[in-house]
Image (cartoon, rainbow, N blue to C red; front, side, top):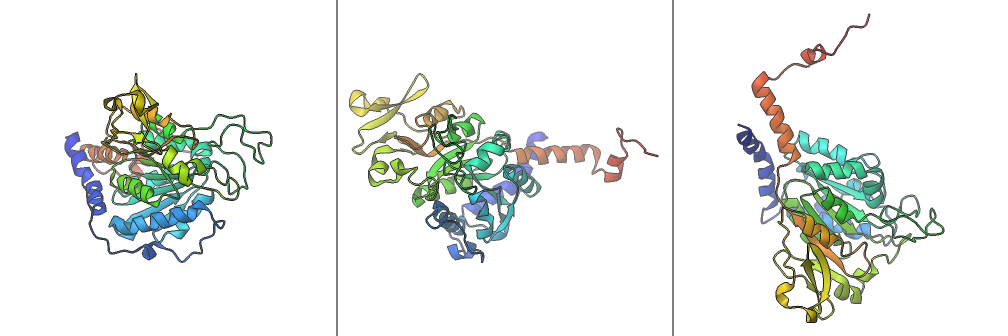
Length: 357
């Protein structure tokens, strides 16, 4: 009975996934551009990400009326205003909670969250990890600029140790979060990383996330040219792109470096960067996003603790498990089948209530 219910309840989600796989879209990027004036600082990486998302939405193949963007507070939180879709600008850190309600109440919607590193990992950290743990059918884009930009340049939960800002004039003494490790530790079923300037990589991870059933967490390194410029230069410069990016591609050996001279191995469960000359090629790790146990993906996330030196990008994990949406709706349908629809008046006057004279 329970499995049959879940199968039936998954029809709407499956229909949405089929829509996402349509070959040809009737839309163009301009159809997702709202009439609102885009108001970020000139040169902000958010402009590139907005263009990337709008272009991808045009190719996704589903109606604008079935897409919802939800945000919290911060520079990235302006995103819903600039998307010609449905949108909600919620409160600080609570976008996952609001988006959960939207997603569960209407399984036919494609629900996206746009948030920053402060919004997601400081005041909103609790909401984020529980949305990922529950596997709510949400796509979460976390723009990580390693700074509080909207409030004019304070250190954030992802700022590096020693970072001098207006709120840490002698340098931050705090160890930063590794967002990939946080998401994987919460057992997120889809985890990926991209970079604002790499539109091809961003398009790839957006496409994979859109097809995924459940929570998808994407960290995107986003340059704040006013308060934290060049933070990702080791990955975005001409030399850095070649030397330091570890591209994770499912089914392929993890090899990188200016002359493909470096590789990643997994030894005793720990990911390590080695010189290819020192090992046999059979020892090189072949990336597998579908491993049920997140330990290997977690170990890959520990190869870097920020965009300094060799850093993995791409899809870390992509596994299937039941969604919170299906389980909640299934539970409600089971209760209805057993006890009927029920009435609100009966609920109000049920046990646990009392009269006040």
